[in-house]
Length: 164
Image 1 (tube, rainbow, N blue to C red):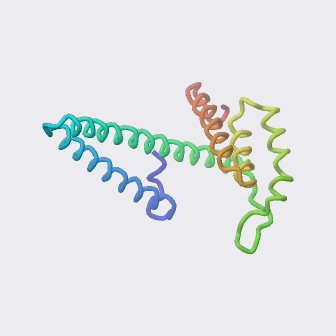
Image 2 (tube, rainbow, N blue to C red; image 1 turned 90 degrees about the horizontal axis):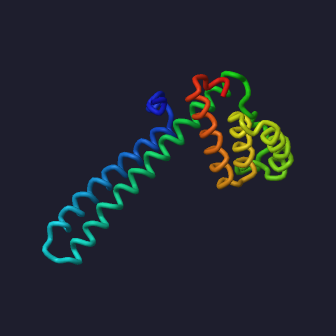
């Protein structure tokens, strides 16, 4: 898994690892508390214990899903970087460091047209996701990146990620 590569030199990865570790600890505590409640004689306690056991399953699923999303996104970014096809981050910024929205909006149609011209190419979806993110639409950026990831995974099942 590429997540562990550079773990101690990348602050973002270190933060993700720390939060994931804390979440795992919390999920273990939930399972333990759920078991205690399940073994109690009261029906209400048993019902609460069962609910406590469902929460860790949902939490573990969400954690795994997000870690896989991050890992796949990193893989795709590395491939695009090797190919020299990552979007260039040259948009003007405010004094606070935020991208100027008008500049991001002006670049957006080119990325959208690229994706419409090649809807089966994960690279175009990846770049469109970056454009959504630059424009401040994080919801669409994540949805679009998930689409890129699905196409990337489908291409890897066919045998060659670089030509997916």
